[in-house]
Image (cartoon, rainbow, N blue to C red):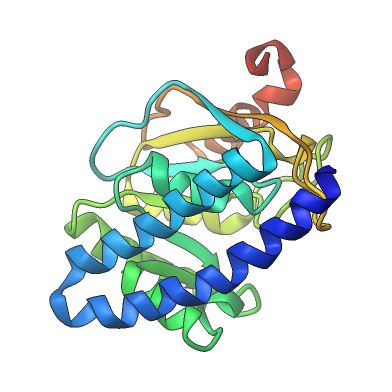
Length: 233
């Protein structure tokens, strides 16, 4: 039955996403606020569909403070990419350039506010990240980043990508780490399990730490649900 629900989810969510992208086109002439409302409605729709069709709920511990900061999130599934839009206040999102280049969808992400990263561009990519990051700070928006760089299955804890430390050092922002255990229910395939996904928001890590220290602290914090599984119980 859960496999049927998963197929039905895909059949509803992805065509609906095209509808929300068109909504972004319609909203943009009215200003940024209506555009942000459309994106938030898309995230809310995803949450509602997951809860009522797949039986996947969200449990949140801790809170994200308002204002500019780096929000560093564990990445195990697509689920958190939309849930974090709901749990934060208009974050600018660091994502791989391939997504921001998708026709129509990529345009919508750029209007919302993203920092596209070309992993092969080296120093050039970091300079572009810094420019966009400073613009986000000027707009009083947080910057959301998946510092491991890609989705990883449960049980894997790869080192953080170098771009995270560069962004942290150059922007001088505190870091809010977020541990997620979505991979236990949400795999790369179509099948999704029912249950509760935990978002454990850790305490702020101050700006100005040396690279080794900030990477070690963030790495431990975003993996804490596996290192201390009782937190997700």
